[in-house]
Length: 217
Image 1: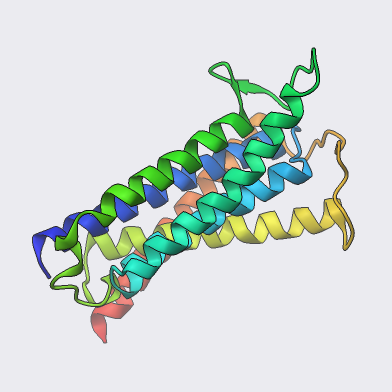
Image 2: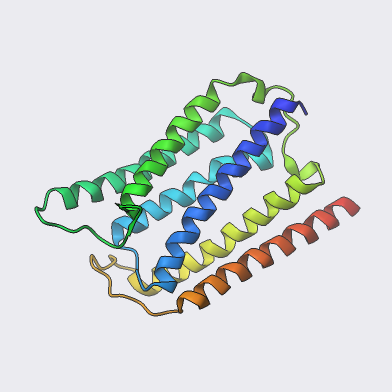
């Protein structure tokens, strides 16, 4: 495996942690601050989850053009949802927007920025041919910190996916989600932070144990 492949793999892992941070923030607002996602918010959240598929494939199966292409497609779908929500609130004079603001922007605006950054970032990565040479097929065959962190972030995403699926079904059932969902009171701010920390610790343990067992085989 070449140095360029290692660097590219690290960039993909960094992107996964950034996306994990975005999902963590949205779940904290939902369960710790009582701010449930609207239907368009769920579209954007799904886009964020889909954005992670490309980097995961790059790290687990080797860096390939089609994995980056999938990331661009996911960003386009999620970006369409965020632009739609931005335009809805712009079209209504005096509309304060939906949900809280972070650094002066609503979450759907930050989501659109994230999707745009993802598209530009992937486009720049595609101009780097060295990452496709000397590819060894993925991180699972290379024991060490990178494998621990990759399994950790994969486990953390899996925990979040289970939570998102359960509570989306609870809120929406099998029909359409409510356009203006009622505020929820699942956890306190402290409880939400503790739950996030517990998910991170559990994921790290899964990464360490999995890496150790793979090393013995």
